[in-house]
Amino acid sequence: MRNLFRRALPKVAGDAGQEAVPDLWVRCGRCREMLYAREWAEASKVCPKCGFHARLTIGDRVALLLDPNSWQELDADLRPTDPLGFAPAGRPSYAEKLATESLDSGQSEAAAYGRGTLDGLPVSLAILDMGYFAGTLGSVVGEKIARAFELGIAERRAVIVVSASGGARQQEGVVALIQMAKTAAAAQAFGADRLPFISILTDPTLGGVTASFATLGDCIIAEPGAVIGFAGPRIIEQTTGEKLPPGAQTAEFQLRHGMVDQVVARRDQKAMIARLIRLFSYSTHPAQDSTAPASTPHGEPRVVATAGVQ
Amino acid sequence: MSVVLDFERPAAEIRTKLDATEKQYAANPTPELDAQRIDLRRDFANRTQAIYRALSPWQTVQVARHPLRPQTMDYAIGMCTDFVEFHGDRVFGDDRAIVGGPARIDGRPVMLVGQHRGRETRERVERNFGSPHPEGYRKAHRLFELAEKFAMPVVTLMDTPGASPGLGDEERGQGWALAANLATLATLRVPVVCVVIGEGNSGGALAIGVGDRFLMLEHSIFSVASPEAAASIVWKDAKFAPQAADALKLTAPDLLRLKLIDRIVSEPVGGAHADPSAMIATLRSTVAGEIARLETVPADRLVSDRYEKYRRLGSWFESSRPATPVGSV
Image (tube, rainbow over all chains, first blue to last red; front, side, top):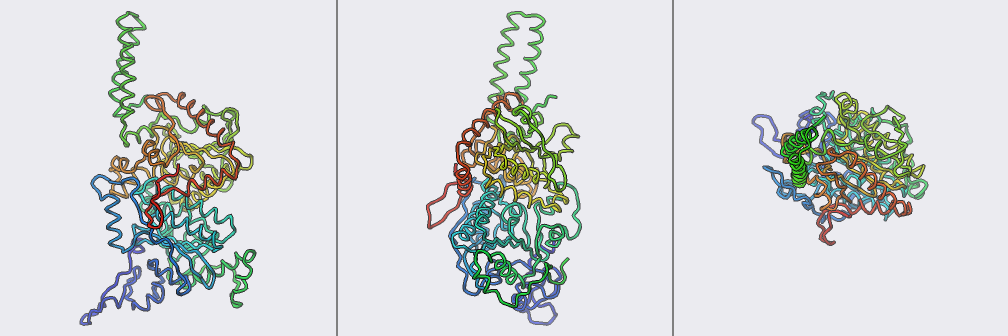
């Protein structure tokens, strides 16, 4: 389980006597295989040997899902505040944590949203990023998610939200908790307009994010191997003393328990989302449906997963 | 059963003296004993008031968890008439940590839904200490929809350490159940009045706590996570719960100041557990008043006002717009 959380680190080629060439090779975060960095990046950071889906940045996600040069990020100037004056005794204050998070990650918050096209379809896309404050849901993330839904309503766009989050941001207390209600309300308002909301759950999606907008999608797609659940594995073991069986809370576990519609590998996600948006838009946007390639197979529901998934 | 919290001890000592004096006076009613007992009564009231006026956040947590504090079933019976408990989510089972059903408050039919923790050990286990399973939230969801169908205002009473975090809860989609309730409550076309009566922690409380009016009893708490859970995240150690309680701003006065809640309901001197029937009577008239006012608002307006209320909640900097407030209310 631990391995799933370890990032694939750039590594130096291992053979003795070889010249060290940093950044040319990466080691898979799960099977530890040495991979040629460029090929690995071209495969959207999926290990060709074991199928492990390493974590992506917001930029990686945009490149994976949207048509080239179609991404227009909106409201990138939203910055977090410290609404509670959170100063835990003997620990760094929220204000200090925010400063170090920004320095470490080079980002200003844990989500971005904007407009773009996906296979020519206009979409509103929001992406959460584990790289900043563990992707936690605070005021800025909540506001961006809500605005992504409102953009969808205003411009008649499908909404896609890619989640990756440890849950609600403790340092914003009840302000963070209420973002769950706010984002769920926004998803509900969006749904009333009969526009499709596709929710993509990636590693990890936990806590207050699972318990709000992320699980309200008209279709819920999970990435292979992603840890998805409400209580994190550590909380479950601490609270109940139960030891989790291997593979608990993975995307495949959630598929088996009826909680997600499809487990879809990265390379197939864009086509799958386009197909779903067209299927859902037939009555409201028949023109969009006619743009669907004639070769699109209308297959049975199936699991699209890579090899090597637990 | 009598439970004395640490910080109540100075008042409890006066109480012991008072009880002894009352007993002596009953046997031998002298003017001296009469004067003594009147003094002691006054001392006891003053001391209790002083203690409760200066509760620290961690002390408030202990009052909110007080075993003798009135719980949802006490309100269902004491605050309502005609309460009929509805069981089960029609899919999996009946969760005992969430109780609910139709009832009347001041004659008006309402749908009552709340978490109930239980008091005796056996009952507490049976009710999973007030931590609902997904089927509890799905039962609540069913009752919310029934309320809308029959145009009954919804009254929710929050009292939970949080949603249950077990493997079975994960298998049955705890997060999904919570999210569905948030979405449904956000657009329910009847008035929704939410009250934290004890401990209102995390998504487990919020999943029955989205509404037009959000009230807290004076010594209840409302928090993103239990102080113990927050401490294990921020300090990596649950024993820092008192420090977490300080940092989280989880008391009713703090949350009202931050405009994150609508109203505080006063408790009897010495807390709800000191006089449960007075507490129940206060909440009955408070909730009845809130419902009467919300019932004058047309359903479309009710839903759009509720959306706006939640939509505005949050705090961020934005160069292109003026600074935003924390709360909306």
